[in-house]
Image (cartoon, rainbow, N blue to C red; front, side, top):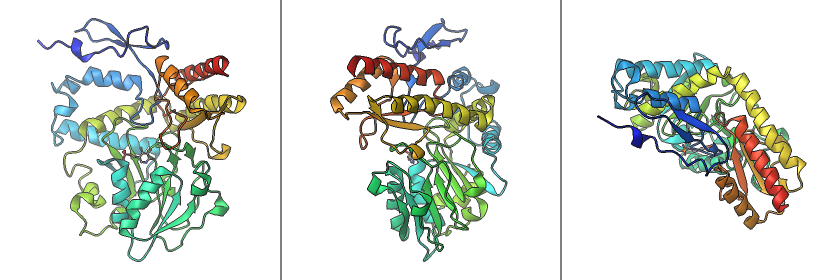
Length: 396
Ligand SMILES: *Cc1c(COP(=O)(O)O)cnc(C)c1O
């Protein structure tokens, strides 16, 4: 008989983390064993809701009486087709996606979309407009330039991307094929709190790090894409929400697997999709609905971010380099006020030892970053805030 003990490796013994949070392994076939969970502030892949992980564990060996895990079943089976349909319906319900948009589950991450979007949506002789706000739009620009002319409708580069362009600093090209925007700049810690008006030019949004963190008016966009690994589940699935007429814009001379219409036609089942990731995303979407949907999630996210920004603004010891109006509720970038790298290193080390994980800033920005995605509980932010106060008391 298969023994399961080896599957459940305790994350740490009780002495390692002081956060006091436990997840109980409740299978009848194994001895109950407490698993310590970290306060996880990773930027991506990132924290997943505990009930989702528990459900995955419970269904791992026998999904719905099939005698197998979702990852062992055919993507053509009735069971998987039902999962695929259900996940699409959940996403449509939660994001209120209109019928004239297709919902696609792709692979290749947001990075493949940087290449696939211009291949399909750039029209001959029409440039692509970009709101250039950081490292991720930089990657998008690189790919756009391979296909067509790239016009920067605005750029925050001169401000080191520490604030987003204001309305009077944006000049769209009325002749553009589409506008590229990154709604939340994961690395720089900025987030658009309202999306600029590009008149009749479709807006394509990279929402990788803030999709489903707040309600969204899908109609404002021609397309939305997001890698799942920040707010929607594990890495491996990329969600694309695309207006059906735009999905049809691409030339059919492009490789078939790189055309949106291929995935529209076959309901994301043209080839083997990331089956387990789609299933896991479905569980995350169920969890979002149990939390009260996006309006409730947004309130929680606001409260979480406020806790942290209040400490940063109220203390002379820490600082947030990001302009107040451009601040992200998902990724909070901060430094010690003196920008002393040795102190910041110590901060990260001691935080990690206290069970506060994933706090180190991106290498291009330095300092610290706490990612507060949907699955990060307010208790984790409270733990971080009290650690910060204590660290300031000892080192300030
Ligand atoms: C993480 C991230 C990406 C890259 O996603 P991959 O899935 O690694 O390709 C792109 N854009 C944004 C805003 C991100 O946060």
